[in-house]
Image (tube, rainbow, N blue to C red):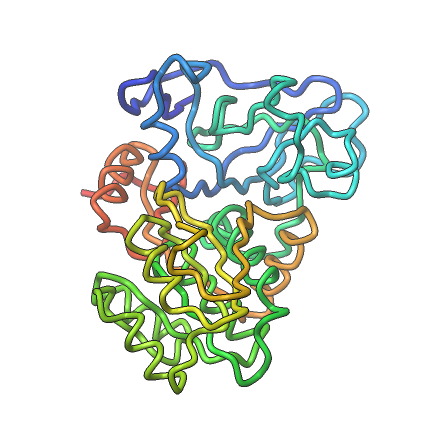
Length: 346
């Protein structure tokens, strides 16, 4: 089968053996695989920190084509989404369906597909346990693939902030990429807060408005001042930063009201000074990470009602490396999704 591999230098397409399902395992024919900025962060790490080589691709949906002995919850032909976070499977977090919070996974050698174990940018994907599979329920696989990663993380971040978002509140969404544009839609669905979107690109601000934002601001030094003007000098009740550089975190702190909350979601590597810094009194800083298995159920349910829809750019597997290049240059609007069966564009 074809697979987009990473060897510590750059992604490359290679023919590798197709997986077979062992006891308790499932093999999917991949019908959609999303690309995220976390993949770029991963590929920026020192090669000695990674179990190289491996197949990229963290966001996956597919059709079951092989089931191992003892598997009873899914059958061949089922269309499913994959819950990506993987834990030890036995700690209290994992037993509660929150494998995203498992403290033992790394030390026990558990590697997520696409982040050390072979991922979804291939014709077939091996899933180690059927508990990671969620019925797709008729969703289009290309638009559903980003919901397993971007949608999951955006939903988890929004859900974490709802307690500080009463109907007369204001929430600032920083970065209208794969996660941000879905976060705007989720906020529009789950809250009555005024949504203020921030980005550096005009086309992404347009995407924010089409996704349900009330206000779209160009991400310059005047953002905190503009937010305070919009809120009568008080500041935003919550900020969800899907970029998380020094610049965006600093602007988030200066835009926040006393007692407000910042959710740091992005992988930008920024730092948020606390003591003596710009944080207002009583501020809370959260670090929502990925999402739970129940969160993914909720995200897919929202998509089935049509209340959230991922903006996607579709690529064949042969152009997956090109899609990563476009993602790194900030040229992808919404989410880049690879459909292995997609015909190569001329």
